[in-house]
Image (cartoon, rainbow, N blue to C red; front, side):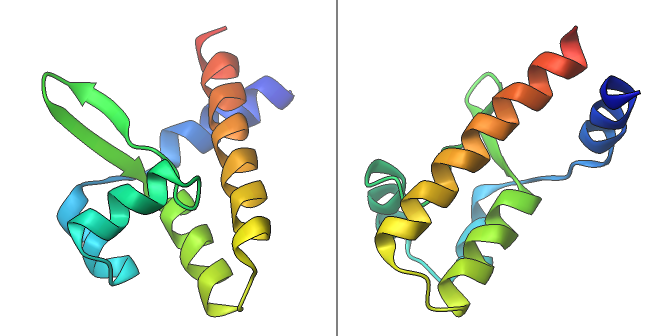
Length: 95
């Protein structure tokens, strides 16, 4: 039953492209990539060819953390968990 829920969650996931991420977070392109390198934003997901995107839910979670005043160390932990959960959900979806 848990696997079915994971499949449903992945089916409902929305991918957003870089322009929308930049607008949502209010960052410049260089700030976005600096924050990804620092572990303060989740990395993009390859979509094929040169196209990449981000899970909207992850971007919204990071935005909420920023708005709530979460410390950079706490945001790094949050981003690590988001990426770990993404990988686990993807495995459940494929398995």
